[in-house]
Image (cartoon, rainbow, N blue to C red; front, side, top):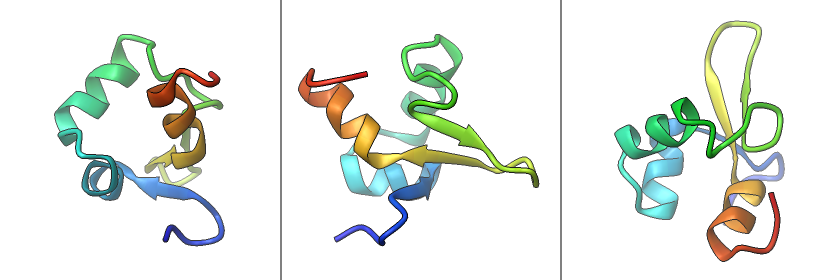
Length: 63
């Protein structure tokens, strides 16, 4: 089970959903995963993935 906040690093997202870290970065770069929907950039520069939004994207039930 994912923690209460549902935001994880690219590496943890890769573990959880089975995509490579590079594939995740490509989805970001190509705009398939959109900032402030699928991912956020923290003030320290780290990227965090919104697991709920990504699951919706994977199943075709949302963003």
